[in-house]
Length: 80
Image 1 (tube, rainbow, N blue to C red):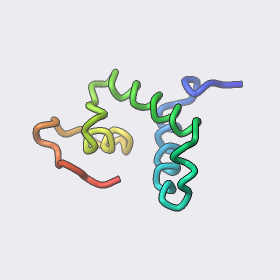
Image 2: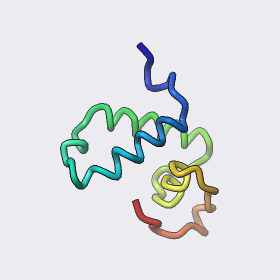
Image 3: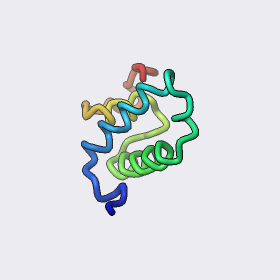
Image 4: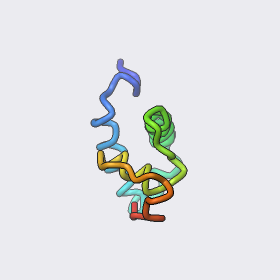
């Protein structure tokens, strides 16, 4: 069986984005250990690439494979 780190970031980002988009309809995802582990793994990967995961615009751009704004130039919140 594969671990989370065995999958491509592209695939993991896709799955995370789909799950995150459905949190409003399925609140139980908020307590999901898998969702939490996936988010931690992605945040660790993003941080290694220089992303400030505490800044929503940078985190979301990275998840969406978009160019990153410097934190001081990024919009405060580009949506989830």
